Length: 571
Image: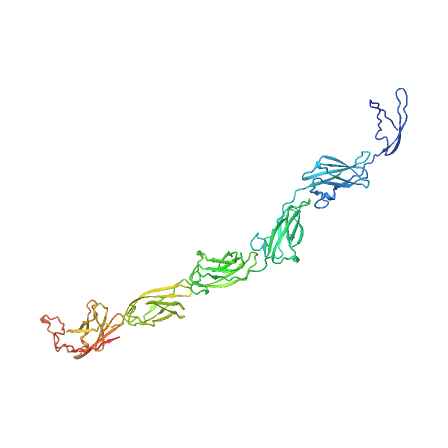
């Protein structure tokens, strides 16, 4: 044994050279000799020399601190507990966040240490080292590790239906799919805990934090409304606040809806879908809130039913329909995206008033003058096929229907008194279009006064003039028939005077037959007939040189005396 004496004021200190002894146990004796040569009593002892390095200890987060995925050294504990193994009875030196912690190792080689409250760690990543130190003060090489502190809960994992299963209105969480797919975002790698219909499903978000989950076929949901919850749990074990949502499964198609014209648009006969409205209004009922798809004339219109399921739609002015027959379809799509079967209807647009004309069957006298001698006249005319014809005259109403060719007839069933009447004729077709004629009708059943033959005059050269009178100011027409030939007379309406020239060639020597017919505007006629005697003009030449007027009046006519046998006829 080598001894090193080093006197100091505090007494001697003995040092052994490090390389003086090998590893092992040694006995030693110590005595002191002073300057005078005096020797102290002997002191004996033992010393152990341990020059071997301890084994490298191992450790990390203890199980209770290793939240999240086991063994990933990610934790939400800001005062984590470490544990591990090392040589029994040595000291493990834990170095973390710039601080040293000496942890004794148990007899079984295990150790455990919880960070003191004053050394709480903030969120972040930390490197740590573990070294073993034996009683001789020898330290092992270091074990290096790292931990991540994450005490922040992940973002709330709000789930919603994917676009392909969110049938109906986007974002309303109403779907016709009984095994819908949900999606959302949260922390990358987080575990999603999804609960619906008393079942819980767990799955992972991807590295971007996006998650997607489809309900298994065996867990298909029947039609109903469900509450579901979604919670995210990150790799550190932090859990988000659960979020909840409502999901409605509706896989039942709405009842078909047949659109019909509204009462105000269904002009004409109700329910026949014939209208004169070029911008008709349709109405119907279906599932509340459903979308109605109406297709008409190559245009598609989309609109919503009300909360009571009723819907109403008016064709826009820009798409007004021309007269014609149109097919239209109506389909309902509910808020879950279920569609009804297609309903088909037909619509007839007829905005053209029916033609209305009055024929002259009962219009006696002058045609189209609306004066007749028939006091139960017949009105006849043409209109649109099957139109309803209404006659209003003398406060009485008569109705008939035009036939398939449009012809119609109305005969008054009670006679009208003589006089002038205002009347209306109305034609109304199936679409409700109307056409009205306002007219006047004069009933005149009285014949005019009997016409008279006032005189005959001899046109010496070529003609005989007959003349007479009828009622003045009555628009009477006079026709004169001589020996079977009819001649229209010229009538002065103001005075009633009339005259007609008859060719000399038809005048017979001797008795000539004549008929006078006076006809008023209503067609009533009075007839007078008789004879007159004529002579050949060569038998009684007229002396033109004497200044005569070449006319022979009755007062002059010894050769033209007229005898008239008159008979009166009234038609």
